[in-house]
Length: 187
Image (cartoon, rainbow, N blue to C red; front, side, top):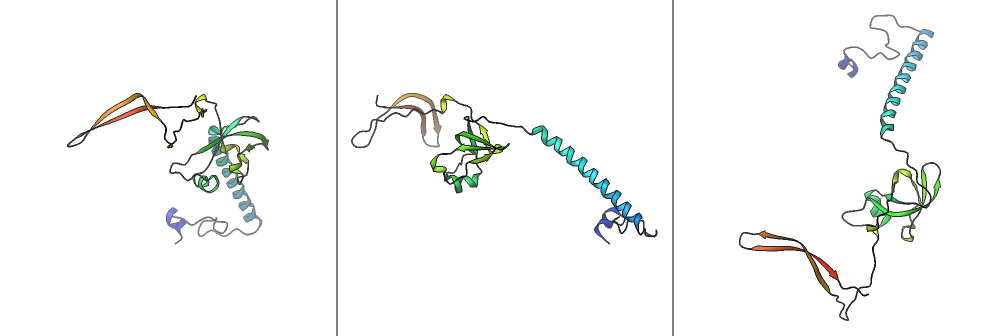
């Protein structure tokens, strides 16, 4: 027996077997009319299911727009980071940037100002790959010259002890200190 018949206990009612076993087969225009009605009913039910699932997806969907001149982060897939962006670290970044938006291309794409190191990457990205950049003064790194001695060393002085722990082993104790170090900067 067919798997459908084993599962449901009756024959599959395809256009050939819509009649029950033992009934006469319908031939001609009546068969075509029934087939068209069944197909229309199937299409209506598929459309209802698609509309229901679309309403579920639309609840979570956000329409994001960015202005030209603003900065955004670019989302990168883990394998693409190695192939296209040259990052080979153990903990690869999920977002890189920030990059400035040059222009809007169509409804859902933006052209970014990428640095010369990323010249091999196409500079137009879909809005789903962009994340808004919120300016934080903590992101700014002040670069100051470091005083380096003739033997290529520099001085570090402890500024404060942040944390102190004592790790007890079976025959000795080890002191673990976390120290804030101030380097001697040129002024």
